[in-house]
Length: 314
Image 1 (cartoon, rainbow, N blue to C red):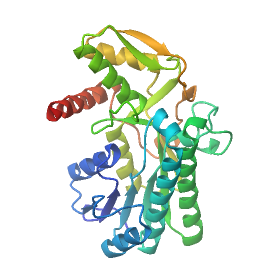
Image 2 (image 1 turned 180 degrees about the horizontal axis):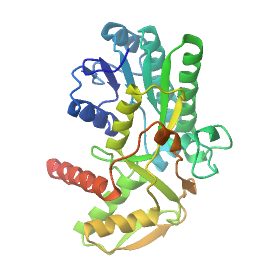
Image 3 (image 1 turned 60 degrees about the horizontal axis):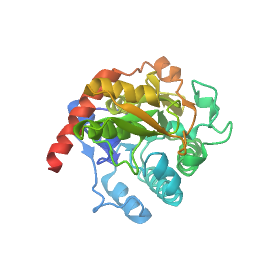
Image 4 (image 1 turned 45 degrees about the vertical axis):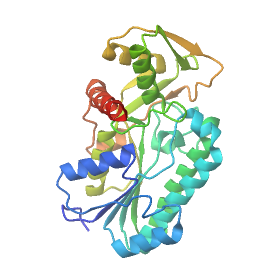
């Protein structure tokens, strides 16, 4: 079945940063049949209920944005939660989609599935080519299992389940809790708090030299719709931006955007994580997809949402 404005599209994980972006994007594009389910109505850790939901709703397409996610501290401290919950959620959704007759599905992975010391930029073919970063290996192994599950179901059952591998994401509805957030929202929160409290310094993990690529979340939403429509023969496709800085470079960029000048202190007892992580997304470009948002525009939209959340908390 070809994707059209009346297609039934189930977005799993619609309350998170990625899922909410996908739902906003699809509504903006005038899709009329977007299916979502709140956690109280559908616990994706529950195999039987997930199966019943999909068998009843019979979506034409499924996008798996549901996952247990977090930054380096959360990944390292809650490995059991990360591997169990992610394996359970994606297994239930992929298998139940197959049982419900879903022919096309998008599984969203993460660039952390690739080896710690991959050649850069990272190509899709480097998967399973070396050791993983130990701080997030539990999450990465779960996501690798999801990629392999999609490949296996395609091979055995003739399905079209695609795995999109986004780089580090940021955007509206992000998580700014310093105990479990990713580095970019953590920097936004730290610098903002330092500014309003008139502090002179901020502290960041490691030596600030680790390099990261980031992608505005609405670009990933655009990629999801694009590859639902597109006929592709590759089943794992990197989704990147080509926008890369060191952690310190991002801190300086955010300070400039917030019009504040802080001294950056380094907590070198904390890990740096992978030294460099930038995706080669030439394959996506060959299929005709490319990101639309600049780093500056993406930040402005994200920071506006961050401020609104702060005002609503008061």
